[in-house]
Length: 289
Image 1: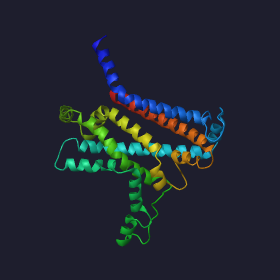
Image 2 (image 1 turned 90 degrees about the vertical axis):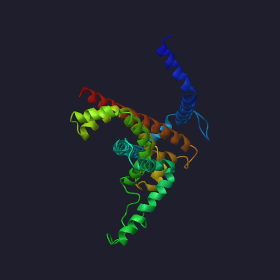
Image 3 (image 1 turned 135 degrees about the vertical axis):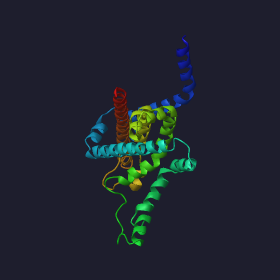
Image 4 (image 1 turned 45 degrees about the vertical axis):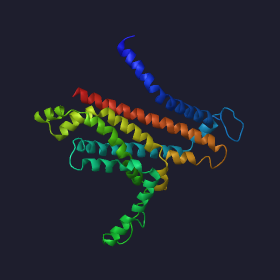
């Protein structure tokens, strides 16, 4: 066996103990959801194969509204988080006085549970929250502003960006720090400005890390439940909220929830493929230039 193939095989064998349980659990969950959606697995009634639950859910207009809303929150949250993480990673690339403290502060949201963050956010923007009280005390407004549960989901996007920014920063920082100083110095000596270096050096060399960050944040934001319940719009709801409403109705609700779960998984996979395709296209454009 060639040394290269032997090293690759050894790498797969070393990763197998960590990767295998994840793959097995994911496969079992997806298989159970699919079987339950066609009533091969069923609670409260005799199991028999049927497309009835799929037909019911796919003909429900609320499904498509929830899908569109979840996709909007997922894509906007992912791109906003990464758009904020890239300049911060560049800023923290070289150590400076206070950079360690700033790095720790930026990563602090990782230690706060999403539901706790949502409740703190509500305390800020609610009718009697700190922002409204402060604006009234300063005489800027005469009565409180309506900011909670906004119809566009801005509050949810802010929460997602705040919560996911440290995660994107961890992934992208390692990639940007891996860019050698000699490359940046050479580009600067050749007359490349800040935006030219960002566009022609930093983004192409860190594109893989950016792609991974976008995909992981998109999947997390797409299936989020806690932020949507606490700070989401009243008139619109996510796929996770739509899915969890069915088990409360009847025993057959579990089968309908399984249909939505499969749709949620397919939507997450499709969105990840789109993001990967766009990243590949951007990389090809950068290489052609």
